[in-house]
Image (cartoon, rainbow, N blue to C red; front, side, top):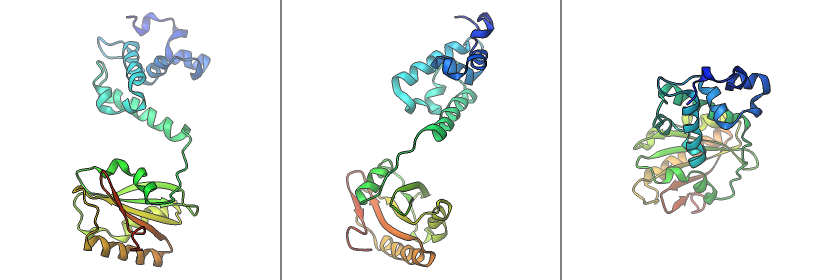
Length: 221
């Protein structure tokens, strides 16, 4: 395996990037340019090929710290460099898909990754005037005392996003989606707060692995 010093200067990833632009580099060379250097016994191009192979096999889902540090020669610092670079690129250059919420089914699909969690997650989904998703955020994690769900935290994302309305949602780790008395009282309290603030609570959806419950769909809003 060639060391970086054995490669002609104009063929080294960073020098090549400067001379020819990033589009002229192969994937492994782009990775090497991000890494900058290898580790003792692990040349940077060797590490880059390993990361490239992982990406080709598993796609962008492979860009997480745990999988990256499993590669020989990749320590925590370099794993963070790679993960941060991909995340930043994705945020700026990936065309965001517009998701329109027409029913509680759309919310269940949007938040399906939380449905089977072993801890309870309480979330706020912000919507624009046309019902398109602006953002979704986890507000609380853990077994919730419903009195802890304060309107300040629930509606703060709506002001940040200049949202017209919000959907609130939480999962039930038990699998049952029947709302408790506390769920019902909390929902009414947040609906009233929304009226005062001028931000509609469009629905409250309770999630589980297989089914979900919509307050609006069941005539409770």
